[in-house]
Length: 172
Image 1 (tube, rainbow, N blue to C red):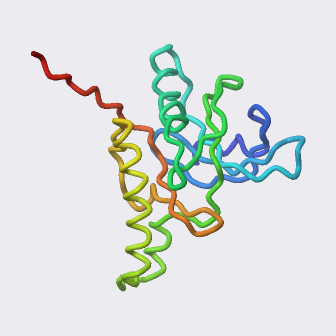
Image 2: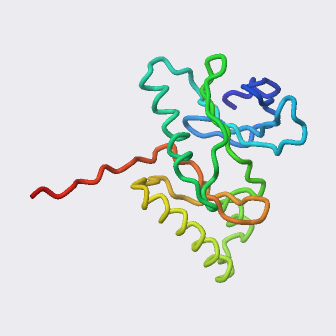
């Protein structure tokens, strides 16, 4: 897998301890603070390739900036964003409950109980409404991008291809 060589490495204040997943653009690791052992574990998204231009760096950090604006109980909070030894990364709260994709797979094709589905949809709907209120469109809503925190609450994640919509003001 891409970036497996990073396991055991330190990025900023965090040691990468386990690969949680990877996609076309980045890998996500479980991270622990290198010094403060009582800090909660975090998820660290690291870009798979080096960034060669300022435009590429800006595009990567756009996700962290967007997430930082999106403070909401049902949106995965960003903790930090930085470049370390050529690796652009950002740090988010770790969601130990896995993804909606993982949960759906446990039903083996059977439907999810209606009340559970409604609860998740309500939380995701509130997160999307909050983002839309800030003129931000997610653009990659799928079960793998809906995570669950330790309390079982849904967290909308992966705003990497989100855009901030520029509203046209009416002319007189």
